[in-house]
Length: 307
Ligand code: BDR
Ligand code: CA
Image (tube, rainbow, N blue to C red; front, top):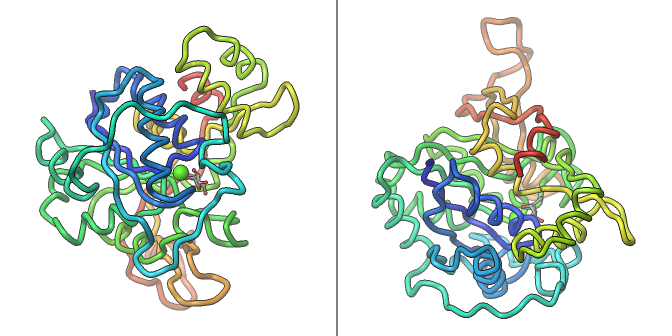
């Protein structure tokens, strides 16, 4: 199986990502690290520990990470993820505490200890990952790929042009994109498209198995649709599907740059879709940016079935 570490801000759809990662046979979930985003970092730690316990994976190491972005002030997305950051489903408190090391230390330790290079899956603001890359650059040789949920080619959600995870900590995202490791950007263009139909959500909610039932409740909270019979967007879980089954995603290697200037474009991922030099005439300068494998299309049915 592929050694994977998820860095998350659990988070309704982060929870869907964890549920999938602990069960898929192609994935060896070696650790989970937590960062402020959807809710404060202590809430994220609590939610993450609870989800792993409910999924029967209470032994996966979990560490607390950054409580705020590198430069931006802390902000929360409680309006999307509920007061507890997990849809206010009334989940039990976790039985265990997080590791006694911080997220950056746990990331380094697990990356260096893994039997082969690790795939990192950040589904949250990229603060922990940026701190890791700057503190312990030697880990990059042991990172197979970073598949992150964030950014967008087209429209944003936090602002008209910026996606939440990148907007929350744009400097951290810029550090990630220039890290010199292979990167897949699982952005809003595909993120919003993978939706579990209402009939499957109903079936999961009626399950006697706690992990499946939790998955159903989380999907119902996400919608789209309200009332008794909502469908449920997989959200962040799609990024983990892209690790287990990369063939379900169509990507293109493109230059991506994060807009860091203050103003309306801050946090935008500027994706250069123009023909490459040599292919045809570019008006103006082609900026020298590292290439990122940008997700442009997804096989929705395939990922719904996989999850
Ligand atoms: C991202 O922000 C969070 O609300 C989701 O969990 C996802 O990681 C979408 O912009
Ligand atoms: Ca998230």
